[in-house]
Length: 244
Ligand SMILES: [Zn+2]
Image (cartoon, rainbow, N blue to C red; front, side):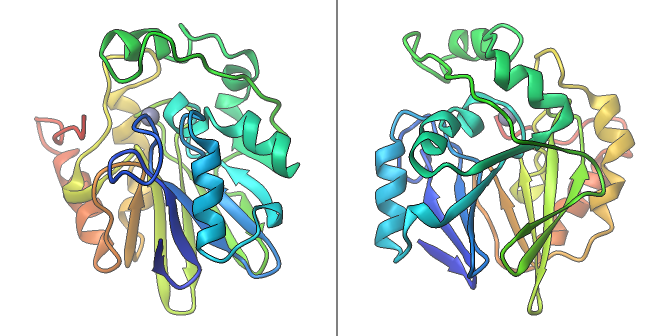
């Protein structure tokens, strides 16, 4: 589903595009190369790939999977998609061991299953990371450049990706900041309000048209209003509301 020039929504549990466990999965079209921002949980990779074909693309042109963080609803499809496309997988350096080892306790999956976000039968498929990224890096997808902002708080390895494309400024915000300024603070190891306060200003001052989070609504204009709302709340006594 085309949502703007060069960006497509190719999977999402919430709006029924793919498996219910899946986060929003975005396809970025850099012309010479395609990239996926997150993969969903991996239960309906076939559906994600067929959505990509229906949007007019050949999945074999996917050169990169670029992850917003390690949580299984975002990274669980990596193994299957890499096996099919031979793409390279990028994740922040804090997330590398987590996805390579696939320890469900350390990844928060045990708690998430108890909370009903996954069925008890779901198993995470570990995978090898090709490139570990850090704050300030730039990842190229064909003609497009994604700037990496390390924004821990939801998890230690959470990052946002910023693209300035022909007048449209986009922020892929994962579970860091969502529509209406909601955040993703969890009762989980690695999720930390201090980290939010210390890192959030990096994205709060960006000019953003499209805010493209991992869940809930996205917007193609005035995205910065939502980020600023969270930023203001993070400077007051009560934390911003959560998206979960
Ligand atoms: Zn998450």
